[in-house]
Image (cartoon, rainbow, N blue to C red; front, side):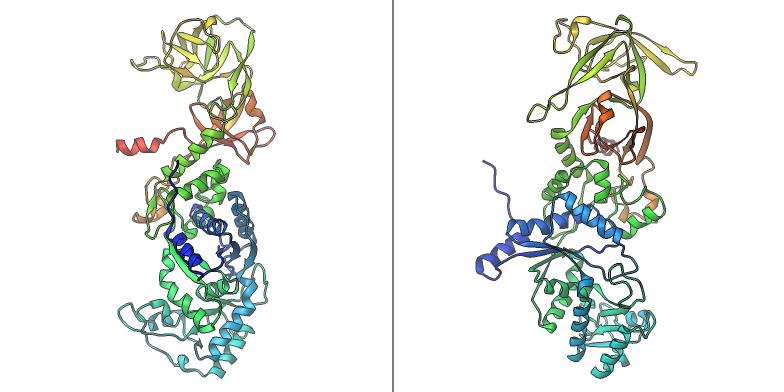
Length: 555
């Protein structure tokens, strides 16, 4: 009997609230800003918010925090919705902070009327200086003492577009001596004459995150506003606005964000990589974006399992990328179709196989599948492509592949013994020669010969050509965020290797975008969106084993 999984700290809070009657329902929200594509870190928040509401019979809203018109685009909105659906979640309501602009404006007016907000003409630099330091209190300015009437008039004129960008801001009037810097008269509104992706040019003042977020939660009656640890200092302000406005008391809870080795999660840094063409767009398979992982061949199931394994913590930590790779290997081992592809080919000629003869052999689709996976036909003939690494001119003792005098089994086919090889003028091996043992056919082997090695192959006569893209880690250091200098200088120069002429078995000519494949002995692959009728492109999702672990041990 499996042991029941323990509750995370947010689930413990919810269960106590429900048991005591303090809460009767659970309402969560996922609130992305549409200023870029979602990354793997967001998947943790998505799984948590949607998972909580599903577990406790609640609801989850998708609310776009679209309060910064200069960085937000409809493209990002569409990509975010596609990513959430792909991960397997459906939101109850699709909402936008911009839906509440009029209501948020009214909230600001209410605070002005209570003497708790004022219009400030200071520059950003002056405001920063006036806030003091963590050890020194801030200092008020002349604008802090404006009358309610003057503030109402100026705020209305700000909305009407009378003042240029940066001329004035609306600030909350709280406590310039507070030990929490966020409570020292924070900004509530700034002037931005910019076109908004939804409200067009209706507004030229926009609420700051700290003012818009908690009030949007309250409007939607969100019970558990889950965010990452960097928002702990914002919680006092979150609560202050709600208390002073006397609105629904949403509560903020913080958990550790997902940090992953060998990559960066900052949208600003990811945008740099895209804009400077250091990657092929937001969905480049090397990017940590959900779109990138989808294109690389990751499955939503593997990412959900990964998020479940790392759990919900209160302390920041960094998760090893190998755990995510383990999750996708585990998933694909059970579901991926087995196929043969020769990535770096050399020709093998079977001397004693009849000229012109071909036969159809049977290969397993997936021996790990619950239903057995079925079988497929694979053509076999006198000439085959094999991997160049499967032959050595002078093999060491424990080399269980091909070398003169060595025997090996051809997968699904026969045992062959190497008799010789041919080289070109540059000294490169161009052909390998073998004799086969007719009575050693797989499934009907009466030869009595035991061999230790099995290699894959593709019939020369029946092979198709494909481009294969081998993806590796985006950065060559474990934590590029902590390294000195420009983070881009730590990009892995070997993060992409393109093999333009890989030989694939005929069944891969009918590969589908929604299928995953294990190329025997080479890793897991998927069809890339760059494929078309006359060109087949495969992306390597992950290798069969963690090669980086070996490199780390060597180092």
